[in-house]
Image 1 (spheres, rainbow, N blue to C red):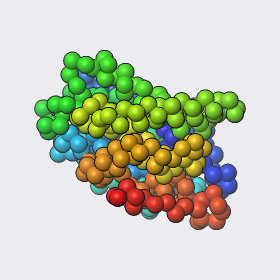
Image 2: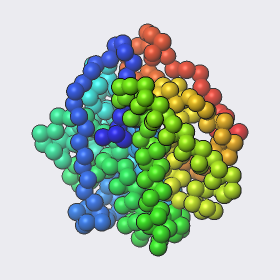
Image 3: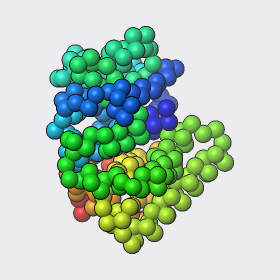
Amino acid sequence: MIQNSACDFHPERNTVVTKQTTVTIDKRFSTQELPIEANRYRLILGGFCPWATQVAIEIDYLGLNQVISKGVIWPLRRANNHADWMFGAKDTDQDPVLKTTKLSQNYQKAIPDFTGRPSVPALIDIKTGQVVNNVTDVLLDELALFWSKFTNQNQKVFYPQGQQEKFKAEANEILHKINEIPGKILNIDSQNEYEKLATTFFNQLDKFEIILQHQSYLWGDNLTQLDVRLFASLVRFDMVYYYQNKLNYRRLTDYPALWAYAKRLYQVPAFKNNTDFHDIKQHFYRVDDHIIDSIERVIPLLDENKWNN
C-alpha cells in the first residue's frame, strides 16, 4: 500500500531488510459488514504516521472518541524485527484494551496465516481482536458518513451533503497529489520520475496557497474533512519530507497563507492532540531502537515551537 510507505524511511546502515508485504483489510459499515456500535472498536495508530493520524483527528473532531477508543504503537521498530509494530518499549508491553504485545497478533486474528507487515491505521473489533479495516481513505469516509448518531455538531458541515461527488473529487486530489507523493518518491528509480512527483506536490501547494488567500479553509468558511487530510501531510512536510524526501523546492513557511492555515488548524484540540512531534522525529529519523551511531540516525534539531507562534 502506498499509504504505508510514507510512514517508513530506512537509513542504509544497521537496518534489517524485510520482504514482507502489507495487506488490505476493508470491511465496511456502509455495507453492513460491520455493526455501528458504541465501544465496539479501537483505532490503533502511530503518532508518527500521516495516514493514521488523519483518522485519529477525525474521530476526535467529530466527538467519536466517546465511542471509539484509540491506542498507539511504539514509534521505533525493533532493530532485530523491522516487520512488526510493538505496543511499547519492552516486548512484554501490552495494549491495555486488546491485551496484545504486537500489532501482528491482531492481524493474525483476522487472517490466521498472516505473515506480512502489519500497518496503521488499524481499526480493530474489540470483541474479536481482529483488524477489520486498515484503509485510511475508506475509514475517513465511513466514520464521517455512517456514524452520525454518535457525532457532535461539527459533523453537519464536515462532509457536505448534496455535494459529495465534488467533495470526494477534492479529497482525491489531496490524496494523489499531496498525501501519496512522499511515499512514491521513496520508490523512484530515475531523476525524471522524482522531478515529476515533486513538481506535482509543489504545484498543488501553490494552488492551495491561492485558495487560502481568500478563504479560511479548503472548502470555504467551514472546517471539513479536506483540512484533516491535508494537515497531517503539512506537518510532516515541515518536519520530515522537506529533508528526507527531497521535497525542498520550498518550505512550508514560504507559503504565507498555507502556513497561517496550518498553524490555525494546529490550535484546534483534535489536531494538536494528535500531532506528536516526538514520535514523528523518533520514527522518521532514528527509525528503530538500535543505538544512534551514525548521521543517518541522528535526530535533527527542529523547531516545532514555531507551530505555537
